[in-house]
Length: 288
Image (tube, rainbow, N blue to C red; front, side, top):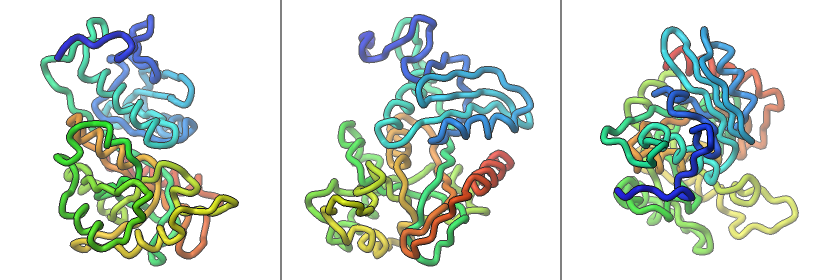
């Protein structure tokens, strides 16, 4: 591929990538991503050794070791737009020479594990349990800006959704992408597997009504009703479709697990959810 221009791959004066402010030597092959910058220290407090710490805006990274395994913990902030930044800059760290802006001859594949918070939409899925995203249902349009969505999407699941659900034509058309099989299976024993719907916002895009009227007030019920080969949509959040989509296009392995701190169907919410998140972090680190 041609040499990238400086505005396309911005490298800081110290040799780090533009937003993450990480250098190639800061990146481990296994990356745990969290939305909240404060959770990075919750993860690295379990490390036996910390090699590097980087901070810029909402992007905080700590790289170190736990039980001899090198891990990078990284905060992404919220939403598909932030994931677009994170995934491209992680891939640049892994697969480009930042001095020459040339792609490396050998591809490096990362294993990226997201630990997040989320709300379930099924009444039988209890709060304080842990979801496992076997698939992402993208309600955003981020992947539409990249070639290859048709190649990586689950065509059967996408077609089934379009035939089963009377989706509002004024909204982005959902697409479905599968998580990395081996990673998904690794975390299945202590989680509830299902499809995760990724919204491009927290309020209207997740069916919340405060003062502004919703385009489709029936959206959550429609998502609850979908079923395909024993798969159903379990929860709402704001990052997984971007992670799974960009990861598949770039050749990285992706999985998301979320602590379900609310249930949109029953109206339940756990205000003391930090202990639930810490329990999920411990389980992930023990398993990884």
